[in-house]
Length: 217
Image 1 (cartoon, rainbow, N blue to C red):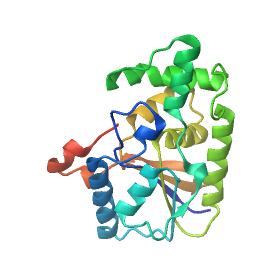
Image 2: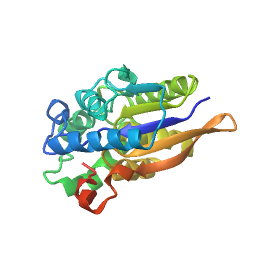
Image 3: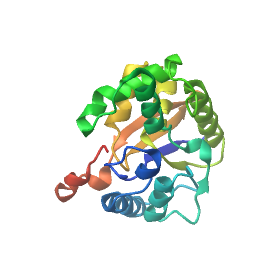
């Protein structure tokens, strides 16, 4: 079993309220991704295997990092469709989608709770199906030879942490909200299981002149 480093994509289109509109990096997201790639090369990080989801923001991130030519694209590493779930919940029970970014702090846990409980009718993917595909993809990557780099999204990373740490929905949602763009999260094999040994690390954004680039959305 090999260790895995999960990376959230760079900042995307923060003003979006649909899946399609959100799925592209902002200029800052491209810069964050470039800085992360430079940091990894400067630190001689060795990743013989690189994976990413098939969403545009995943592919843009891995290319800006300098790993586009070697990355294996896997749709199982794609994000949950949060905006679609939110739109369904608004239509079905009247839970309004926030107009301001701060409103998502309370909104996201409500969406996650309703999704897990099966209260959202005809979601694009059930919570159980998302849980299953995430677990299967991570376990498959862990069985490969050599450390792996996985470029994905915050919701998927929070699901991985939920699975490994046995978190409830409120803690999973809080973790998802906290995950920064281009942050690193490492899973290390211990006793035949993966254990989190690094969470939300942004060493490429720690210099004072880059603090402005430590974004959550």
